[in-house]
Length: 427
Image 1 (spheres, one colour):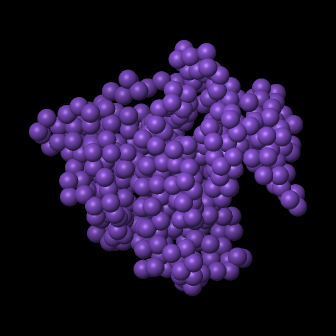
Image 2: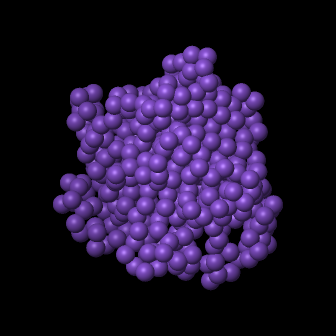
Image 3: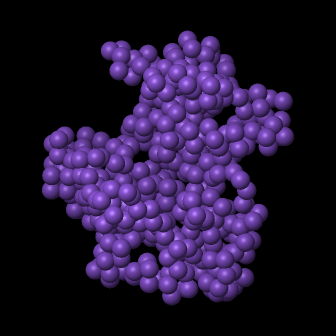
């Protein structure tokens, strides 16, 4: 039995999800001869630290980020856990995205045999790509969509008779509605909503293309209205906006890809979409016999401000291709929430395809952790993984290019000069 030490950085929402997911896969990893041992949990919340050992069975380490000179992570790993340069271990980073590059360097530079697994996304600026190039063989990212049941079904179909010719992603959520109801409460990450949300769809397209031996090369913005939430020039001015964006690939004549985004929910998205001549998502799916309750998530809040602007989210991919020489269209639901499960709907056969080979009690994050731990423990090349540096770099590069192009063409009035200066500084 090979013991593999694991260290969690952070025990907030994502850290707790990762811990629950790790518990789900312990049994099957041990059947493979791998003993995943949670060695420690690092946490900056002093009140939470006091209960971590009892909750996780791991050593709790308080990280004093408010100190005048915080102790670097690499030193904490050595001082608190006794880890040395020749030790093998895996770090799962569930800290805010702005911490990821620093944590990645601290782990990979000082512990040459360790692996860094970053909660999405790893980078919020182009500077992180240099670190990825330097340490890419030991960096993974938890693109949980790569282990979503519906995605696994499409990947399996690709390995059979199904060949993709066109991908259309529709991601609609209520980030914008939240901002409109409470404009002073910032949501999303530094660097914009495109990096917070859209990078998953770009990465998923890259995974599907790679599975079909197609490499996307470049992307363009067809229509962009306030594509990303960007910091304004005035730090006190938090008036981020919400809108619509359509992105389209330029690269592959054999496969088209489009990405439709809105940060203001399904209802407003359909209005924006129709205004620029694009189809309504509701109408498009209704023509295929799919009712809203099969693909739309609603969760009204209790307070009055939310009663009028129900949270509405959708994540749908429409995949056009051929199956045994016949034109085929799949509707793929990527949103996994309580009461709404992923599905693949076959429009020609007018049926939901059986996902049972991929269904289990394990979450997509559990499967991500299992894949990362299995590959690392067995010495498999990590850069070729769906979570590996190749997909991470490709997805981030595309998102940076899209963001820069969109905001240079249609910059925010309040942030335009700030953004142009950023572009000059960062190239």
